[in-house]
Length: 386
Image (cartoon, rainbow, N blue to C red):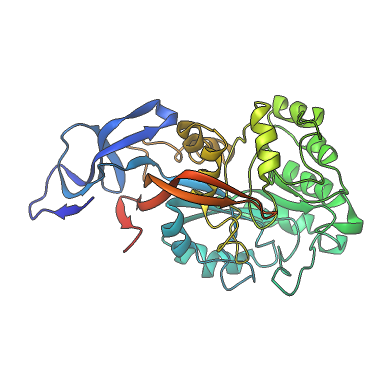
């Protein structure tokens, strides 16, 4: 793989040549060239020429990948990672920060991180006033324990004033995150979502509340993250059957997101759910400072785990492109459409032995590994090793 820059101006600014183009939204899976001009996809076809050419032979060109669950409020929270550094590591062109900031500190997140990043950052605003503020290797404070921090008025006001960036409302419930408050923070978040017309993303950890009680409250378009979490409080019975409440939730349009993170993906759960014909709707890393070096690492490592579970590559790419774009209600993302799309990801599925770790320490050997080659963001080529 290589790129060249030509002295004279040709029809397109940049052309990715010879890659396998996989675009589930447009039903495309073939070897073609992808051209960009003026920051947009300009043409897809054979024999295209451009001022800059990158040879993508042997690689896969996809719509700009979307990591639906990240924490990139670097410097503003203890769990944040740098958005642009992580984008290069994961070949993701859109990072969705899920609750790092609440209404009390969103302005700083916007001014100091989002507006300075080259990578697109969208936000699920936390209903908690200061977002996730006590999360490190030494301190773990569940922000939803104290109902005084549930800032419904403030969250609605900030969300409505920042519709260009805020795509939903985040809340965390469970034994570790809401403790004695139980399911009440979710009920408050739903009220904010109703007020603003936005979906919510709900985190679930150990009971209480139960997995079933959380999904029973979610509406069409709402997201349940950590959907393949380990026992206890997982989506399947001990015999592998998917819980009835989970099936009802999918039937009415609740979106099931992986949100791997530090403690929310288990091989046992994944195998049971996939065997039952219940794959996730969206695949995301839940990357943060405590899991970027393992077990989550990045979006591509998480995608590789679903290849290992038998999910077809086309479906894995759909779950990180068009599916999250639909969940985010962003029709400009998740596809390669001339005149509309700005981004692409360039990845390679290598024949390489890896040991894939879940969040309870179990390893699964696998013979393939997805690695980053680069991205195109707003028409600009960014190589992973640059």
